[in-house]
Image (cartoon, rainbow, N blue to C red):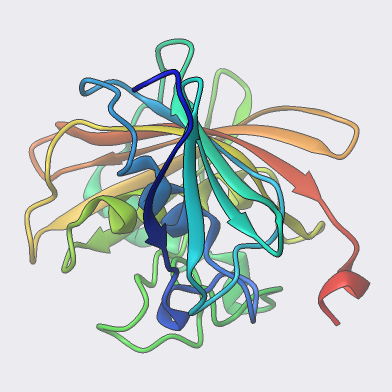
Length: 240
């Protein structure tokens, strides 16, 4: 990327790809901006600075190695090549992931039921319907898993698939949170129509910030993509 400022094609998050009602799904929005970054195949880090607007053209500006999508005169998201390697999460079997999905806390109560990734109100073929439920902890840390049958396989959708399992691993059931930062690396294209495993791991918390990691793994046990996230705990009144 150049060191001088330049303006690129606008970024638009279509209304279908919402997270909380009225704003963009964090993973999809981050992946859409990540697609602008020349990271030579490596991971990309995206920071969300305000809720991404829906169906709104955001100016994308490149300056000093950072891409910024601007909304309302202020940064909405910024992206750059990630500073280090990503670890991801060890997977579980498809059978374990299927069983875990039946224990998904969002089936009983969901803060964002229309979320593109994990919303229970999204129909088959519309949302991804990734429903992460608890599985055996990893090194004593909470871990969740679900299955995902890939349909759309473009970069923003894979980032979306890597998104919400982190929040549920960090106990979204008891505390509402939104994505603050996500670093992800997509290693291969998911196979359309094939069942994949999505896993999430809670790595620790500092106050209102919760650190997590996720992976998407195909039926042969190969990693499709991996990510690390920082989630920000928010008040439910903010989305009332």
